[in-house]
Length: 72
Image 1: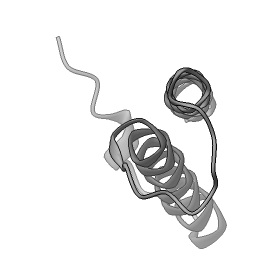
Image 2: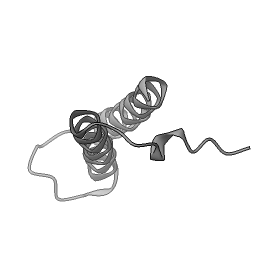
Image 3: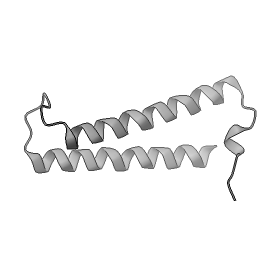
Image 4: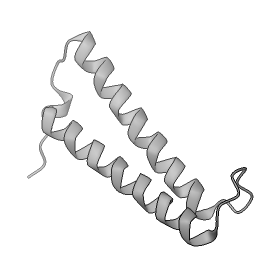
């Protein structure tokens, strides 16, 4: 069954931290995808290293999302 505890009434501080955490998840996810798929990146890095950095950022984004879900 789905858990809708995230929609419970929260204090303004908790709501702000939740939104900030979600924004940071999206930022890291976008950065990881940009490293992998953006060919004209301003940083001159070889393709295998760009993929490795992108995968690391995507995994880190999901780790942050899981820790955010555990807190709430």
